[in-house]
Length: 234
Length: 384
Image (cartoon, rainbow over all chains, first blue to last red; front, side):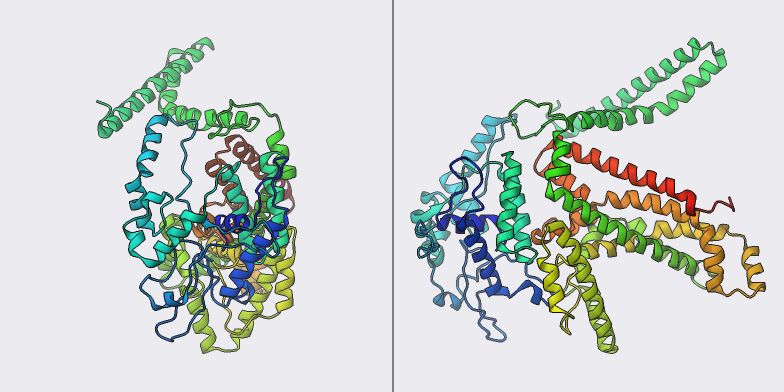
């Protein structure tokens, strides 16, 4: 919930564009503010305000959606961003109460909203200065081959980005199978992000301040806009 | 042959040794030649050769590993050198420095964090070191065991294993530090009020600094409005931005052993006659400490202050180990050197990172010069 990739997913579902027509960042848009507010609301609905923390402040990765076996207390269902990451075990009874859907944005307030599902592995690329570009490219081809992509994602409990890699553990689980179907239909990845390593640091920094309540959502997007614009030299 | 990594290592080691021998001989020969130019006697020339031959491995190392990188770093600080960039390196003049001083809010935040750690952590560290030194200066049973115990953190150092232990100990819910706090309050309930008051003051103080860093006092107002924390509240050492810097301060205090040893040496150097004479005049231990020991310890305090301040302005390891993977908190604890590491080795901006390192050097230099200038007013060298 303080993750910049989650933020990008919500932003995308609201129809947000990362850059304006003149190439400057678009973090001062209503979609950006709404995405930020949504992440904060979701976090507070799950964990309560940070200021109320007594002994620990949850890191905010994953979701609290299971029933406590000892007390029987239902923690209530919240959004699960994607795949089986941080989710209850797939054989838990709680899954009967959970529906798996694409992220639908907010069509009422943002007409360009669209259903999206986060579908990516990791951001891998061959740098320009690499001494063995061809070898590195070969390795990437191997890593993202049909079978390797399936195996790689199985170890992490994720949905493979390749449609033809969605077999085995994906189809054996009703939950992952459903997610894979949605991913095939609505999957989005991230591409064309300028200075992505800088943007990740800037966003993680600002979103961290959001969940610790150091900054309000409006201050967060303003900070990202300022810092990212400076990082791009615009 | 060099495809084998083991042979490659041995080969490189041999090359390195040969290089050291050859450069040392060359440097010593050069020194002898210069001595000859200055019409030194044959014995003097031989002595010069021998002296430089023994010193030259260090000199060569210094040139290669310090002087040359320094030169490169200074040059790069005026360029836009980025490892991941395919464009050739461009000379940008003072642009990196201007950006750092005028546009980079994260660097400013890192300076504020470092100043917080310095101006809160260093005085506390010195005070605890002095207190321990005074206590250990008393003749008592098991004195050496206590000395060893208090110096042990210096030997253990700020290495990753030790810092990871600290991370476990500082855990808000299960860490031993909070368990101890809870236990003490359970035994003596009125201390709960003291604890809550301390938490409130600390959080308010910390929120104020965070407000300066963030240009937003949202959290400060929230803490102020919330008032005294709940009865079951404990410090959120590694869970809240309000405590992230205080955890580092705690670690700094824990590592006060070196300062303690220096203070101990200083206390041992004070002639006993002074204390005996004051005792005859009716001065108690408290008065003797402030009127005799403390003024005569001022050179040692000055030394610890200079060395401590330089170390504090370069603080990195505790922050790296405690918070590197704790994304929501890292920005509240990030120091100048951490920011330097982040820019240079995370974003591969070598030019910008070099500019940060030179700016840190200038800050340290200015602070140290101010200290030397001010020491004339308060350091007492009467005894030395």
